[in-house]
Length: 181
Ligand code: 5GP
Ligand code: MG
Ligand code: MG
Image (cartoon, rainbow, N blue to C red; front, side, top):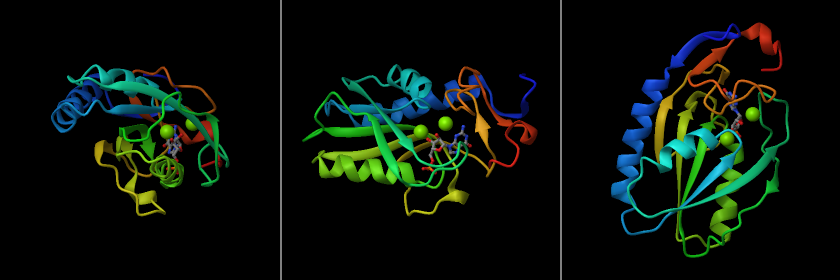
C-alpha cells in the first residue's frame, strides 16, 4: 500500500468484480440500443476502459472534460467545458460514466446540457457515490459502491493530479491534503 493512503476501501479484485456486474446489467439494459458511453475525464478513464470491456453489445465511446471551479477537494457547481464531445448526442441513448458523485453539481450541469442537446435518454453510471454530501436531488442509475464522507483516491481519482494510477481505491491521509477538504 502507498504510504500516503490511510486505508484501502476497495481492492483491485473487488473493483473488477463490481465492474463485471455493472457491465452485465448494462448489457441487458442496452441490448440493440447502440448506446453512447461518455467518459467524464480524467477521473473516470480507468473505470470507462474496464467497464466497456464488460459490456457485451455494440456501443460507442466519447470523452468530455469539464472543470468545476473550486478548490481541489470540493466543487462549486460552476462548470467549464474543457473538451466537448466529438459525437452529436441527438437521438442517442447516452450513458454518462463518472468516477464519483459528491455534491452532484458537476453532473447536474452535464445532464442538463445533454438533455438540451436532445439525447433520446441519459443515464448515469458512477463507480462511487457519496450520498451524504449531495446538495442536489441527483441519483445515479447505476452505482458501484457507496463511500463515506472521506477524500478517496486511486483508480482514476486524484489529489493534485497524483494517485490516479493506484490500482485500488483508498482514503488519503489527512496530513497530505491538510485543511483543503
Ligand atoms: P461534485 O460536483 O459531485 O461535487 O464533484 C464531483 C467531482 O469532484 C468528481 O468528479 C471528482 O473530480 C471530485 N471529487 C469529489 N469527491 C472526491 C473524492 O473523494 N476524491 C477525489 N479524488 N475526487 C473527488
Ligand atoms: Mg468525475
Ligand atoms: Mg480531481
